[in-house]
Length: 154
Length: 154
Length: 154
Length: 154
Image (cartoon, rainbow over all chains, first blue to last red):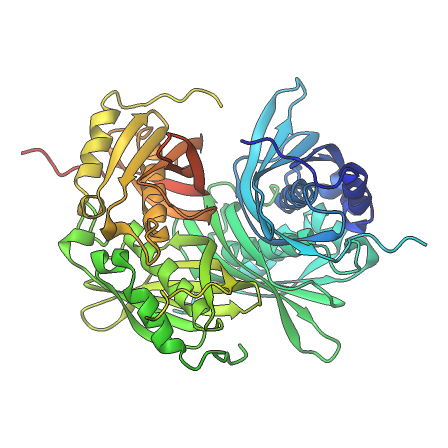
């Protein structure tokens, strides 16, 4: 993997600010736990509200944090004056998300001017710190230039 | 499409009961709005809590209801003594979910003893009732026999 | 589905000409059997050379004709001065391709200036004319403007 | 990645024998270039017959060798008395396959009794030996027990 460089020196604040303006991420309790150029990790802590009928984190929540991690992995590489769209993603659910802490990690595999491809992996962190694979996937993200994600500064 | 028949005459109550035992669906406010053998429609009403930074319903929410509709479309055809697992899904996001009401519809394309394949379509219902396509996808679901989804009756 | 219109009145000849310049399609014996704006059907006749070890058409061949049908369904809608790239596709194999004639059909679901999404379905035509579903999928295609697919005319 | 163990000590011969009984792989000229428990590499040498109109290896050929590598990566872990089915796969095409030698590598990500998930990567080997990423994907394979792939020995 060639090392990836952010075009925008302010990428970290720009990504975290964008993430924090998403009410849906507040609703489920997801946060960005790690961010590097071309890489993003989103954390979700298990609360009863995000589970399914067997007490595991709902598969839909696993998908949400994977998709979000991919979006910000790609967005970290975009110019400041751009926004990111998810074109599509595919996710294989490998095991029930039976842990108090999930981490969705996404790494840019191929950065392009228009399209960026990211791998996604979600792990369930066990009480002893071991990580069990929950889901793996691929996402295609699109860069829309000239449409900054943030509202204009007053 | 050959017509599909539910093996379990009680499929409607079994699916709705399973859905209702998922706290994650309550958290986001999704409900089953239509259910037939091999078909499920999940409705999500836009509230600020389920949006992203531009006021549209968050793409992750679109994925959650699509995945859920596919799960119950498949589960409706399963025997009473079975549960359903999402093996994988792939979703193309076609347009921003800019409407007060989203409907995720899933139809079984191929029913199998072990694996069932479903198509998924999410539409944004406009104020005038027109439906705009938001997302389209495919899901692979697995039938686990001998593992009823519901807790034992007391 | 809104009706789709070809921007290039010469779309039919442009697509068939492009297809015919692909040696790989000649190698496997695939042909375009139907073409409309936003729709393409590719036919593959079973010969021993395209089978796997059980005498069915090889799954890879099923994927090849599905992908090709999607490419030309999209390409039919593109301006004359453009070429088409497959960004990604996902295919579910539903049943063995056990027939002497396969048809891969692809329909544009969403046409966009940059990206076009197509559904793909492959059927195995039985001796009595019935069609059995072999595969179903989705593809994302990209339009590259200003790069005509054909070599310059002399 | 936990190390993977073949259940069948004869896995290497069983996989290569199965591959060699596929006329479609002979037609395109693909061979197994490396095989380990849970891993398979398929090689395709560029000949004019496998190209598209610009002289690159046809994307459908890239898909064929990726899918095939995934099938044998999974099959290498199966018991002797089993066969393998591709349930579905998803492939992102990252760059034109512009090289005289392509390698499709697939690694089992998750081995299961019924379903096995594999990652797939296709690289174009440049004249100087460098590998450029052409495609990346994921595949879901199914193990069918009690149905040996090989014809009965006389």
